[in-house]
Image (cartoon, rainbow, N blue to C red; front, side, top):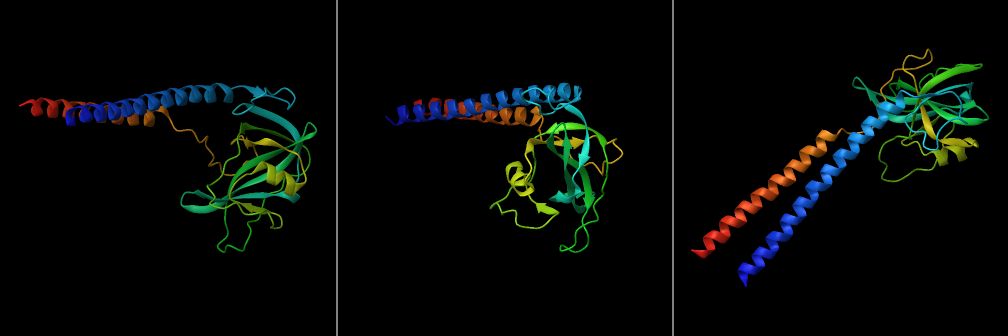
Length: 225
């Protein structure tokens, strides 16, 4: 009875480990496909909001319009070369809609209560960049947007920002082209881990399964003696 119980337990553990390894393999394949899609999409450029596909993420986009500098957003806790700062975002009016544009990183003043001097670019501008989902940091508790402008936020919650701005923002962010004249220091990169990490995890699960299989075989053989 003890031998049967041990065999059943070993089979369950092995099946679990193999399943975890196969899941990591599938995740690696998904990341590989996503990386290929990101590369392909970022090379495709659209020139109006109406021409965008239903899923516009990671495509290039060029727009003509104007910033609203009265509703600046500062994405907090962004670092560059060991310095703390913000990502500066402005709503941008183009094609009859509002797009939140990330201009890039700016250093924070020495004291928390101070706000950095923000750049302003008036008149009609031609902007180019990559469409990205809103990014931010993990918040244990979401704080209401009660501060005055410019807003300091931990996350880019488009719905809450739309309500605060009283503007119908599109549900994504335009990450400005690093070469654009109004671009600040660029520290943003797509938050996509490569497939290699998942392949490494899969190998670990498979090695654990092989080790347990070998130990179980050794124990069963020894128990016959």
